[in-house]
Image 1 (cartoon, rainbow, N blue to C red):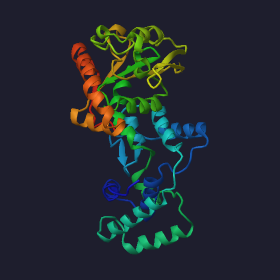
Image 2 (cartoon, rainbow, N blue to C red):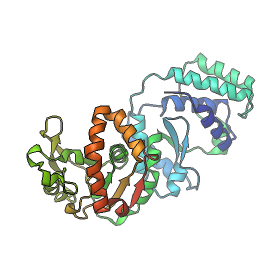
Image 3 (cartoon, one colour):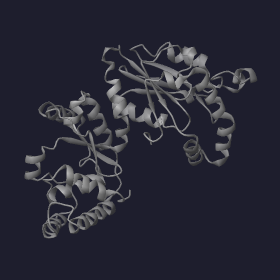
Image 4 (cartoon, helix red, strand yellow):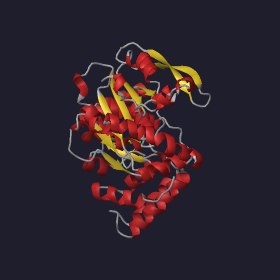
Amino acid sequence: MSSVGFAAYLKQQALLHPSMEAQDVMKLCFQAAFGAEHILTDKDKALEYLKEEFGQTCAENIDVFEPISHEYSRCNIAAWKYLNLPSNWLFQMFYHTASIKRDKQEAFFIECLDIVAHCVKRGFLPFNMEEWEKYIEQYMAAGIRPVHHSESYRFNESPAYRIVKTEYVSLLVLLQSIASLSYVKEPKIIAIDGRAASGKTTMASLLSQVLCGDVIHMDDFFLPMGLRTKERLSRSGGNIHYERFYTEVVTNIKNKEGFLYRTFDCGTMDYGKSRIIKSDKWRIVEGSYSCHPSFGNYMDYLVFCDISSVEQMNRIVKRNGQEMAQIFETQWFPMEEQYFEAEDIKSKADIVYTNKQIP
């Protein structure tokens, strides 16, 4: 973790919340370094507390997320409520953030304190160096620990938020959009199609955490060697076993009951373990070719993840190495592009994400 950029987050917080005192800045430093201030041990109690606070907080058109470090953001309950987003989605983001086993981040925390001192000297914060040094001396005497907001801050700023991973920020527009699918019968199906290395798997993983939905990967349906004829691979999406996907997934995906499908292991080029799909509210299909026309219109919402060719190659090299990147460039990229062009997938999408929006 790097402290680079923390000064900017700190200054922004001072502008947004002019009632900040030394105690509030210490709380900010702790959250920036350690995230959620307590490891979540009682999930039911934490959910009950959030719902209670959610009910007491007035909806307000303010920023949903306030970044406090590269890794963490404060998600404002008032803004979340203003957008009519479900409280349980916010809780899931908080829960998955608070449940992360954190490595020791004392070094980053100390760096943040040094940055605070620099900002105080420059006059960027609403208290002086004497106040800061007095508070930090008292604080450090009892050891590094979470603290409450000051009385002044609570009275003037009415803080009501949860600490969440900044990764979730990229989902906001999508969550706003799918929240309107209240009329759709459960389980609701989201398909995430798009170019290689565009962030499909990352998006599916984050979305699965928020929605408590199971993910079905198109990588589990690569075509076995025995079926890879020249004629088959010349078709749009011909390198996917779309017949098996239709039989094992499409015909079952709208059933409330769980189902299972066989996975395909590209390492052994053979079938692996079966994957069980249990979720009965949301199911997410992730991967190129997930919207092949032979599947019909099985999804309720379609996301297309796009990426520039330069960034795509950079990510593939970093992820798979130079040798595999050449195979992607000469074999897999052309097949994907043939599919996208032939089936016009991007124009059919309900929303398009770029690589700048998804890490």
